[in-house]
Length: 157
Length: 154
Image (cartoon, rainbow over all chains, first blue to last red; front, side, top):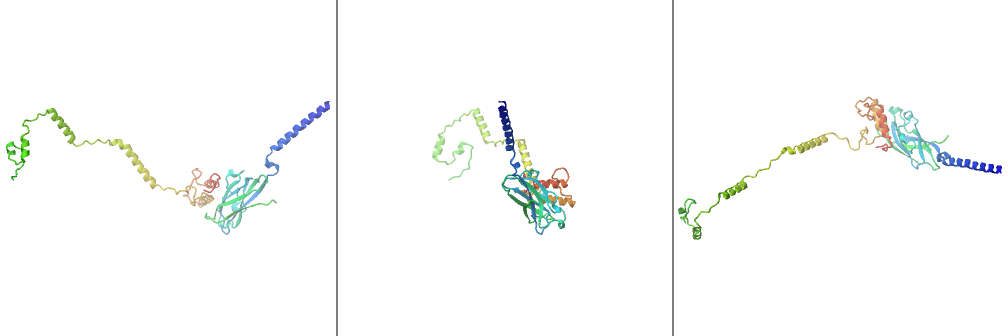
């Protein structure tokens, strides 16, 4: 009889332990369920033959599954430092980045140049969609120039 | 017909006038006694006539009552004149829009940085209000350009 009671107690205890574990698992956020991933987006400005001294672009993820988690500078020396951005953009899906260099025109980049990199966190299975818009770009004299802004997702090594 | 000059002297001379017979007979039938008019009635008529015929008195104007209104109107005119004389900033152009292209963006920060580099002293744009124009104002201007609150490109 005592053995039967022990078995009942053990069964109840086991049920309680498994129940708590299942409850904890259910409370975990979706991003921790293995469907969250980080991506790297490179931002390019193509100023063609004009030396690029300043740029300002707006980058936005349009389908609500992206959070911006970090922003860093670009490739050429003139834009190596991280661009200026509103700190409120972190953990949101929209940012305006801008940078300039007062260096001489001969040292400024021309053509398609990687000016910044944006790190994002994507949640869920949905593929993120992005939009980029060049707000302004300027030459070494501060004059507006015609340029094109693009982005490319960096391939994982 | 004999012409007579008008006269108001005696009745005898009046009889010499050649007036119409009807008028003469009517005048002769009038009572000869004088009508008694009491002096109080005379005085009352005189007072009424004086009051009626004397020039109307103009009401006195108290100019001091209008003094506050006059001062206010003068001040308004002066203010209007001053407002017309004071140069107004062009509509839509913010103080931070240094290159006057209608937008506050990174090119304005760039323009300020270039001016500071070349040592131009008449910049006069202390955006962070610390009494100096330096790189911190450039940073403040750049931060305003990328602010999400105002859309970043105004």
